[in-house]
Length: 491
Image (cartoon, rainbow, N blue to C red; front, side, top):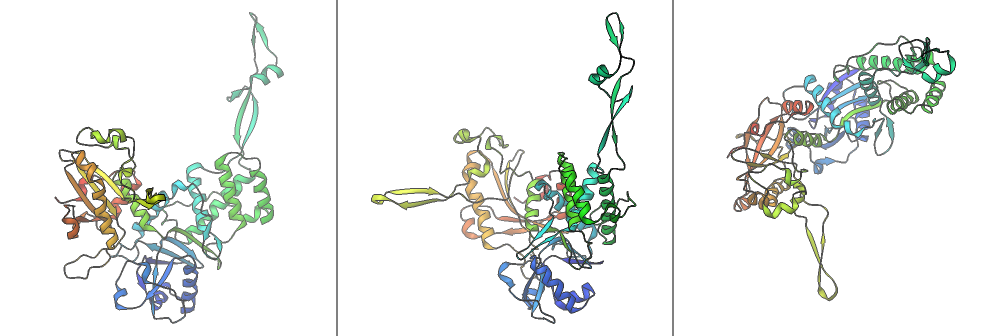
């Protein structure tokens, strides 16, 4: 299979993709059409303003068919992860990685982050859902089977063997009823004890089938150059072929029969996955195969990761939040409500009978990304918003890749919403900041965003913090917190 690295949201011409994929224009058009079905690629007008951009906004997307020789559009890929399509393995890496074209180390880490991010869903993404059809996701199945094997081992069925004077559990009822006893001092003694031994059946059909498929998956992932990328070790634990277990219908019948008698959750999950693998059996480089592992919304991953490592306290009861002293009197009766619930919800007021005013409260309101309090002599109330943009803020370059005005105004409003709580509880310092990912190895305070109308209300400027993504991700993977002092927030 042909391995291709693609940077998320970079602008590619059709000709550039022909050179990158090392194939014909006809093939590129075919691949682009299939990727477009899954929302992985978008088209934008080809002009000088678009050429060097690395962020994509919905209003820039053009509704256009992909045609051979088309030179009026750039093609922008909005995906982070891995896609296998026909004979190609497409490795999409995050847009902030600007200095490399084959970031295998960085992408390996990102894939681990995606795996952990999706771990709570407890489902196997067997299918790729798009607007027109549903196709089988062979890559997800292979990854699940291997990860499951490394955690739990092969599928096993044990045999219960009754032994005489064995080392297993003593079967007292069977011993008493089926053997003789010697009586001494009116007490029975049994010279022969019947015991139970649980022995694994190495020749069990389902164990052999499981190991055969695991070996086959390992070989395919190795041939696709994906074992290393997913940081996996291949397994070769079977020399049998799938044909040795019967034709497809027979294997499916046997799996279904085993499912009817298995009540162990892990075994049921493995059997169902094996069933799906056999029922949709094809290889990663088949012409009709399309598999994917990743996300179209890496911005949500960045937000989640930053919230985890900076100890987001939005969902903590205010009675348990670290403060310079006791919780203020006016909040004592509210100590069990969460910090997020202190933000006021809009009240909609209408005129009823006799023009009397009635009030309805909206369900939703402002929701900050991260609120964290830094303890010390000077307590700091820090408001953070994780922004997945490639910000260019350089003295002699055009400002690009920045959040819109709504993001800026909301950040000011977060501080305004918490001002009564901050003042009542004697928190002396408030800091407000945007967190941007970067490929650098250090934290950098790049400046700040300001609006005079809010500065007149004595609200804090929004500081611009460039975060080393690899450090952030490593803390997330290791379940570690990042000290708030590393943000280099200025006074």
